[in-house]
Image (tube, rainbow, N blue to C red; front, side, top):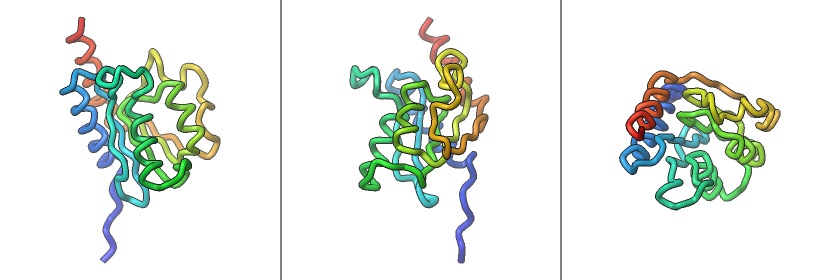
Length: 148
């Protein structure tokens, strides 16, 4: 029996669950997972406040965990699901790991990589956006509304 492949929306729900963990820790609620051969090999969420590290974004944490899992620095056979469009720093890291596919929930209209240059990613990286966009956007919007 062949198992059916999970959809981008199903995997985004997993990333969203990671964002909810960040919210519980009073971190900006961004979550990420890395999928390889249909399996989740890394889960992460923002830890910038917890680690007092401006680079501890969900994507960076997920890249590190996935690289350790695979025993190599290239993620060209992997898909990263992240609830918010990566910033330029994270997009550059995704370039260097040669990510195969990026799926993000909602656009970041203030700090997203597409504002700077949409070609920050590796030329072979496929990009899908807008998966669970409303839910992902609401989570971040509510977080910052409550901070004000």
